[in-house]
Image (cartoon, rainbow, N blue to C red):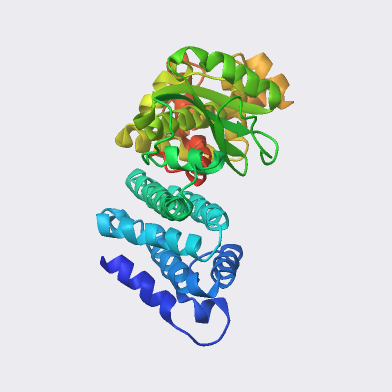
Length: 376
């Protein structure tokens, strides 16, 4: 194991008093709420699986807080993670609570890395890779064991999880419409099957519908939208082996739609081609984050820029939306220009600032999809 893995296991291996900080030192750097959730997750496991879960969470917390994704780069580490999933299946426990917890830990680590400021893009990607790898390994090990013991086909949610993690599933179709969905108000209770299988965690989810060709995406997206009017939906066709990549793309486009302030509805990659290119280019994404940080931290500046972008640069409409005097709006726009070097009153400057704000706000939504399934 790597040094981070060893530190994580050692940190969680100590006994002693029952307090979280003493019994599980690796959680000491987490917020109080997450500390309590990690401890509850460990102590809530069947006795025979508790040590395996404790080791896994120790390594995960250590890797997320250090931003060291090397812990999960070897086949051995992936197999160790899968073994924990198998141990849960053998003990009759479900992996869902742990998958949700790992998603929450990843989201916290993403926010923590993003707050580090300039140069954080590399750390952000490392953190997301850790969360994805743990999720894939845990779910994969659980379903592999369950299938080997029962010999029966996977149920809908199990099949969706297996396909999203890139596993080879004998009963899978040759291609699928992959639809990423995020609800704007609370959690998604469930997604209509529409002839496929779905996996949902919190307010984000994926629907996978078997299809021989890429033609039904708009139709299925419209049906999902009708079932969830407050949802953002993005369809993406893929051959079965390409489902993880397709889910990544669809989830990224949803994140960009939400980050841009676009209304709930059906969106396409073509609608955010420039923003998507920025999101996939680490150095440019880092520069965009650095550029927009002073605006996000300035009183009233972020909401002013957002309103100005949505008003297509129309100051009268933006001022009315913000319920401020035109002179107040003009002052804030001048301040944004001073802080960033880009004048939002000029079309080129407004475009750059809009892209920067969208990329910055997309990270939290990306983390939500990371909690559903590993898509990178």
